[in-house]
Image 1 (cartoon, rainbow, N blue to C red):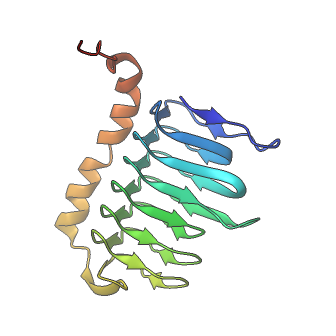
Image 2: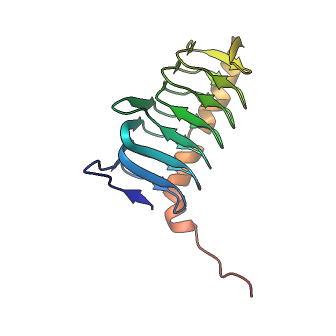
Amino acid sequence: MTIYEFEDRVPTLGDNVYVHPSADVIGLVTLGDDCFVGPGARIRGDYGEIVIGQGTSIEENCVIHARPDQVTRIGDYVTVGHGSIVHTATVEDYVVLGMGSIVSDYATVGEWAAVGEGAVVSQSTEIPAGKVAVGVPAKVVGDTKKEWRELWGSYKHVYPDLARRYPKGLKEVAKGD
């Protein structure tokens, strides 16, 4: 794991957290139990604070940061899709952030909401609980359906399971000549 203290700002990791060796967790960052941080992710609590709940997956190449003396909060069982950015925002429990999405300063994404791939939740925007938002800027286009929640709920255990399996199962393979 690539975990760094920065000027007395020390990350706190819960039980069964996996941080890929090519990912960085820097400074005042809290990762709840069973979190997965994929390759290339950057979680920087160097001058702001990052609080991430349990069972959350921060997939490959995500960036999580906060303004000075501000907090970025990501709830429990959230999926932060590949290449997403969350900056000084609040993402509540069970949210799905699609690949390449951006949640900007002081925005809020409510519980069980979904933000589509490539969508931009611009500064101070609120995506209400249980809503689906897409586009640039992101606009609400519907509700998260019961069957979607059931499907997503079944997926929410995939990454916590990977967080437990990766430390034993991930092995570097010798490079070819």
